[in-house]
Image: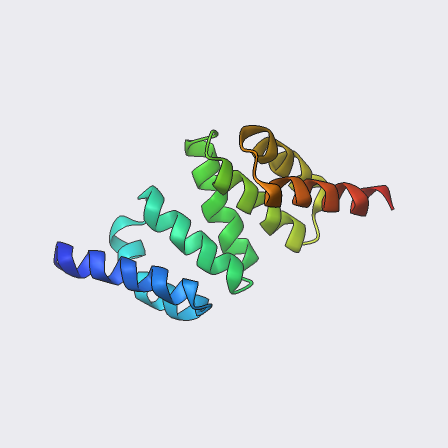
Length: 122
């Protein structure tokens, strides 16, 4: 696969994910994951597609790898927290969500922390 094809494939996968076609995005990413599965950009895009297609185990694995490699990646940490929340593991989700909220003042991060804290206090 040529570099241009790889870039086109990646960009097309981004567009598909933006159009809410997570499975289509994963189909486009498949060859890139085979050849560049450890690239953070490819891995994060795949993790987003896994999350949006409810493949939470795969999302968790990809995001865990990203957070392990770069603990300061607030978005990967946030998405890991959301993945754990969707997998009905709020106790495991909360530390990741809190860390993401502490690293970046994103309203979605703060909202997620509050939502999971409410779930745990019930």
